[in-house]
Image (tube, rainbow, N blue to C red; front, side, top):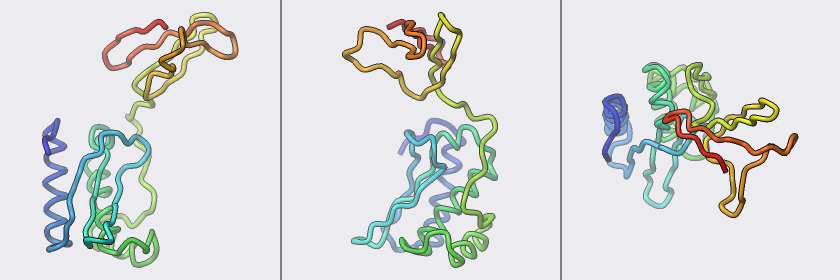
Length: 165
């Protein structure tokens, strides 16, 4: 897998090192999830092969500090070690703590993380909304703000590109 940043490379090396140490001989792999915005990571077991995939969201790698990222990696590795039916029970908590994690079920919110890539501005009433995707169906002639019926202007927050539909 190719990595976009040095930070992604470091996280991948750390995760693969832990997988090789704690899940040897299994068919386990690591991936960076470029689509997820709501979860920090995941562990998917493959019951047929006895292995699985541990993934961390690129969004988290980009916006969280190193401690939070490493805690996410150990969180998901703990799921791999405990099996697909353990969840966040006592065994999982102890395993997560033994790997250097905090043993908590939920990750902390990332204060610097953007709420979305695109901003929708309604020039008529001044309302602004945030989204991760353009919110217009291909068959629509324009995007409208339902409360006032005015045309909405979409702005790509990262590039500044403006789309008037």
